Amino acid sequence: MLAKLARHFATPGQLRQSGVLGMNQRNLRCIGSYNPRKLFPLVDDKLQTKLLAEDYQLAIPRLLAVIRSQMDVKHFERFLPSGQGFAIKPAKGSGGKGILIILETRGDYFRKASGQWVSRQKVERHLSNLISGLYSLGGNPDVAIIETLIENAPEFNDFTYKGVPDIRIIVYRGYPVMAMMRLSTQASDGKANLHQGAIGVGIDLASGHAVQAIQHDRPVKEHPDTGKNLNELKISDWRSMLLLASRCYDMTGLGYLGADLVLDARQGALLLELNARPGLAIQLANTAGLNPRLEALDQWTRRIKGPEQPSEDRVAAAQQLFACDTPEIRVCVDQPHHVE
Image (cartoon, rainbow, N blue to C red):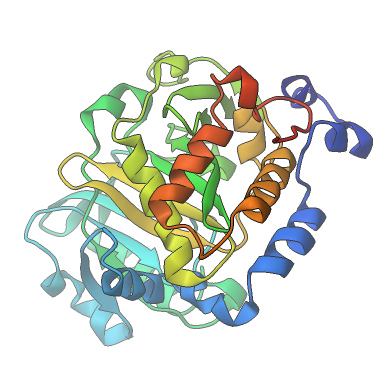
């Protein structure tokens, strides 16, 4: 049913019947109940997240520099490896705004992920606007994070356009409950941002296989730029991804969060950033509502006695509960599911 509803407007009753978690319900049931506001800065500020992840020994892209002032902007290249690429991100940005990916430098010119070359002056202007707060939440002054580039895993080369795909995993009370991979396109300027035209591919929690793909909230079967069949997508070392996402709960104390990860060709699973208010389009990408999964986990945790489970056990439970190819415990269907 959910796949059909994705193609046209649906009534609130139809959405509830399909198990779809709406924004108001997400804010009250998930964020309001499990995310204390005092913990929000741990994820709203990407610099804090990176420093905290280092303390918890979670794998992250290496931090090259933090640009805090206009004087730093004028000399930003002193922090960078000669001739190599880098990523610029606002510490307090959201929705992918303000992120600039540079693949290569030649003198005073820089090649973006889209293939376009830009001048040093434009990069400086971008940094200046960033620290002035142009991309930050509330428009407040910000700092620029410069970090090493991710090397795209070869298995994804035909699934993305001039960019590195990332994986969003929703974590509820420490358990992964839903996942999707975001693939960059020409329309998204090489960025893995759904609002800018990237593709969202729902991922089966048990296997790491693709479930369905969407672009602009509509189902798609092939990548518009590469022609690759999206049903063939499979993420290797998938369990490491789930374990990394689950450990973000232990690190932050947030009971409902979105963990954005990437698979680097050399380093494996890396944490990019966290979100205390993850979006809900992931349900369309999986043709499944979040509500049945949250209810199943609430029942599951009520049956567990003793101390809280470690991340390895939480991941194993989630993979058992939400495996799309396990008919007897199938939660990725269109109606609410009851776990015995």
